[in-house]
Length: 387
Image 1 (spheres, rainbow, N blue to C red):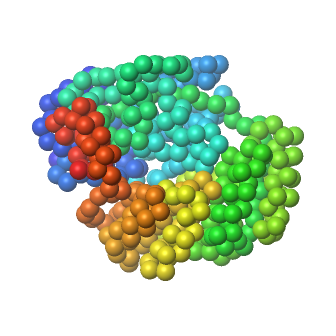
Image 2: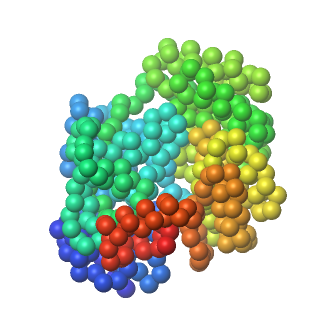
Image 3: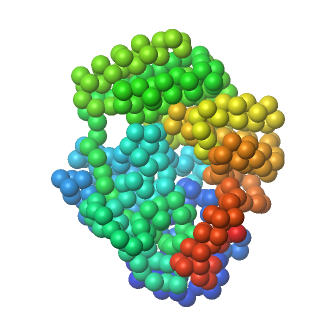
């Protein structure tokens, strides 16, 4: 079956309007959670290009299929950035395409800086998209302002293509920090690492990232905390954090940002390092629950994992020798028990069952009502998020 690759928003609307069967919405193919049985692929890759960039207004508008690398390059030229630091799954999935801004927004892909700056949806100013009936809709604008009615901007972020196919997004951008320093602690257990990250995040020193790689990934576990800003302020805060974290273990400071780049690109779980055939999950938990949950899971399954957001997010990877269906059920059961949720982000093998955490009856009814409004024919990534 040939992929549908519209060359314009109008053609995108025509294709959706004329479609009678399920559509799998895809950008660069680097976030392939949207696999739908017997669905035709609808790719937004040809809807590409930055249509407006005003560095002075900290505003960028781009078509949904614009590669993330192209946007990053344009921003770097003006010493600016996407503050929510989207993670890159290209290495994990082995995708040949490039991560696109539409895929980033549709999945609300947010990296380590979310703990301080916010998520992708917090920087989204406006959207244009095609709903399940082929209508072109727009919401928001090119500046931050109060609006009335449905906040479709926030609704589309993280909807995974189930409510509409993004054609264009408007984003707020921020200046790149003048100086960056990392405060690292080595040799910590998961429990102590979460305690150290929580202490740093609860301090007045404006931490912009807190991650931990346990012994299953590194021979010597390491915990990293990041501070950014003007050089004098950063050096002062880094020294204060070094004092604060000294009670947990050996502490060092560094200006090397390679560790953060590796975390953003998920190098520890990538195919060049681990090979193909693996699967990746994202757990969202209270930081205090992260260590007990992962102790329980790692006792039953041979997994690799790392902590982000001070333990609020856990990435879990398993090779092809692990029963992915059994692990998926265990992760979702454990997450549910502590009030969190687990999502299957990527699996190289055929996988049956819900990839997202099953919703409560009340939330399920709300979600179904939204899908009935925006996709009454049920053709956009059907069954992906709930019944």
